Length: 154
Image (cartoon, rainbow, N blue to C red):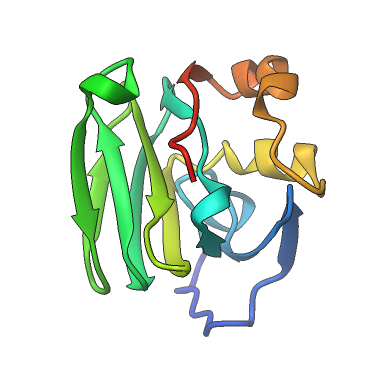
């Protein structure tokens, strides 16, 4: 890429992932693989299972609402738990187990992955009426993601 990329909210393409629609703020193709950024609004029922990435670091910026993060252990019960509000930045290095859940009715986040290839997983799964992570462990594995425990209860 020879120039900076500037994308205002709503300018990126929408992508359906399970019952959530997120905005692809910047794609791995646009950054030569360096990063992917997604803007997503989640509700309490959208929590991913506890998992870890072997290939990328993941960061979140809370734009609105409040979000609870679990990190650091292969069991939800043994993870550190932190709540984050608007403006908070959370960094999850590769190999560190983590998950998150909105603790307000909804929360809006930027989800940032470095490098950016994991976005292919979200595109591969596509829309569904509910999350079915256990049915896609093979696809997750193709992106270096390992599921460790169930998602937090909603």
